[in-house]
Structures are given as C-alpha cells and as structure tokens.
Amino acid sequence: MRNVTATENIRRVPVRGIGTIMASEQAVTEWEGTLTCEFMEVRFDKTGIKNAIRRAFPSIGSQVLNDGTSFEDQLILDTDGVQLDIFKKVSDVIDAQGVIKPKLQPYASVKNCLIESDSFNISEAAIAGHNQSFKYLTPITYIQ
Image (cartoon, rainbow, N blue to C red; front, top):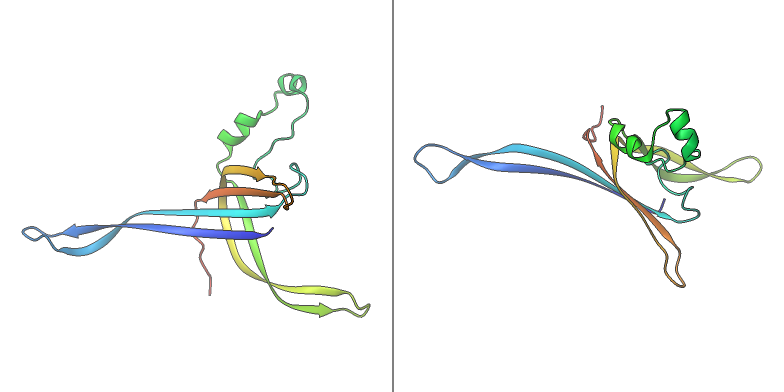
C-alpha cells in the first residue's frame, strides 16, 4: 500500500431563534466518513484490500447450478464491509540473525468500510497503480 487517506466530514446547520437573523448555535445534521487507498499494482486480482470487492467466481454454470452469488449480489448484500487496521512503523529491530524487522504499533482501525470505487492506472515508463475508495459507517474512535 502506498497511501491511505481518511476523511470525516461533519455538516452543521445554523439554528436561529424567533425574531433574529443571528445563529444561536450550529447543530450537527450529518456525518460521513470516506477512505481512499492507493497501491502499487502487481496483479489486478492480487492488489487491493482483500474481500473489499470479490471478482473471482467459478464458471457461470456452477453459479447457476450451485445457487452461488453473483458479482451484483456480492455488492448489494454486503452490509458490513471490511475492517482496515492501519499500523505505523516505529523503528527497525535487528534480530539475532541480522535480519531487519520493522517494529509496528497500531495507528487506527477503520470499521465498516463499504467499497465505492475500484480503479487502476497504467502509464508508459511509470509504476502501475491501483486505487480503492470506501465510505465507512463507524467513526474512528479511541479508547483510553
């Protein structure tokens, strides 16, 4: 994964009292969370968040005979989405054999990510990329 961007938008609407044009408060009326992940493309079927969007199915005949789900069903029936756990690298640790292993710590956990877009780009003399965008239903919160 190359980049992750999470945005939480909060919409506020002014509330006014009778007989005044001045707002007395800004009430929250909407919350929305979006997340975008960018990857370096290796193989189209191997790049991206696992199980965010399922494209590999057995043959069409086996789907009909085995009462399997289609691509459309998978998107429509997915109400939970995926959870994305993000870690940050704190330092490198060198083990007894001299192998460098990164020391990681949790950074954020984003739950209920529902895919909105899945795209790729291939350019001459550049590294191919793969992008996925999500809407998430649960705000990122911290337990202290």
